[in-house]
Image (tube, rainbow over all chains, first blue to last red; front, side):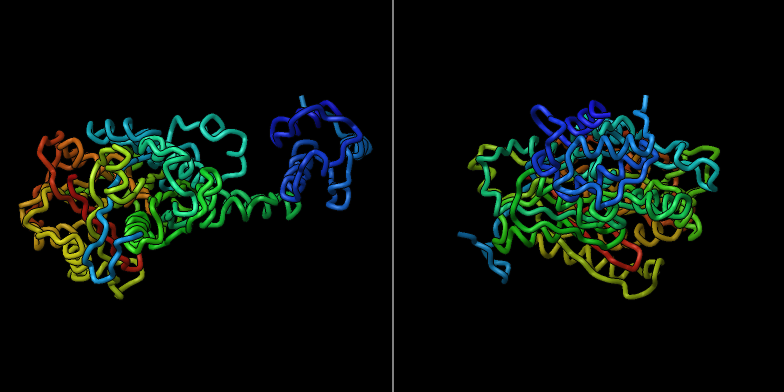
Amino acid sequence: MFDYLCTILSTTYQVSGTIEPTMTCRELELDSLSLAELGAQLEEDLGVTVDEDNLTSTTTVADIAALLEAQGAVVPA
Amino acid sequence: MSSADVTGLRRPEVVITGIGMVTPAGVDTATTWKTVCAGEPTASADPRLTNLTVDFGCAVTGFDPELVLGVEARRMDAFTQFAVASAHAAVADAELTDRSWDPARVGVVLGTGFGGQPTWEEQGRRLRDRGPRTVNPLTVPRAISSIAAGTVAMELGLHGPSLSVATACASGTTALGYALDLLRAGRCDVVLAGGTEATVTPLMVTAFDRLKALSRNSADPAGASRPFDERRNGFVLGEGAAVLVLERAVDAAARGRHPYARLMGYGATSDAHHLTSPAPDGHWAELAVRQALADAGVQASDVALVNAHATSTPQGDDIEARMIERVFGRGAAVVSTKGVTGHLLGAAGAVEAGLTALSIAHGVVPPTANFRSTGPDAADIDIVHGATRQVPVRLAVSNSFGFGGQNAVVVLGSV
């Protein structure tokens, strides 16, 4: 799941450099519009629910991965 | 620094130095011009319209937003994608670079009738079918009508005024008129002006058809848009954009850039008559033409070409043809390029002004596709059809008339 998130973040959201699990959305320079878009994209692609409270500037990549896995999300083929 | 003068004296001469287009006739200006000159209709069955009463339109084909605009394209509705691609192409064509201008003195004026219509429709369907949670958070910034102009400014790093103008099917021409005024008033040094529309959608086609505005010639889409022809029975929806680079002639000369044409005059009036029908006597449309000629300081008898609004509707084309006959007689060649492109609504005036500038630059008038004859009792005007006409075009007029009776006309001239 972490690798999947890294791929989305570096392509669609153009996050540059190495992405570490402990990095927060703020450190990845994702603004509020990007966070809203990312949440909607994950819901659409993975069939999960991503509440606004669970995806904020202080959320880490590992937090997102854990949130998705807890809902049984499977990386799309 | 500006020589602008509201009395009309010492106004700066304004020229067109760059043209960018994404149209059903081609995803760049050269291809569009070639298709228009060949008189090849672009209307065809459209998979987006399957099972509708009118299942065809003039679509932009071969345009890859991600390829042209990169990953940010996903945040843009098609109407913005067309506009941004056209703006980039126009600026490159004008040979403007970041060092050519002061970004705070560059404006963007884009006409659009409907804005991000595909986005509104898609998100409306999601709300109805799958609930509010599935509505994209970017719906508003993708679809509001001002966002195409805002995004052009963003993508090109421009800090002058940027705005959308809406006068229905006259929007593209209205944008040119306001851009001309911004330059004459000295508010801007350069204006990117044009129009954009993305209305080949299920709801728009259905809604226009419910008004009985569209041709229902599904059996022969390519023959459906036939401006001025006696068998015309409605227009064909098109999509796309055109952006023109407008600047003062002295600045273009200083850069060594030879313009396509001059933008010499603008006229605008309102019929104040009816929601959808033009005033039957064409009086106010005629006044817009005469205002534009006066603004340019020229005579109707000097005009060699009229790019007509003529959309292929029975009533609209007839009223315009009679108006053209009154003003120009048979003295000016007349073309409607909508036989090829269909009707691009808020982008139409910009595309047609661009094509008119190319007629001036190349001395070539494209044919009115699908036109054969006007039938009895029609106005006596010189409709170019069958093939291109090679003729020097020193002065030309481009007409646009919108639902609601909004009339806008520009006059272009050779350099």
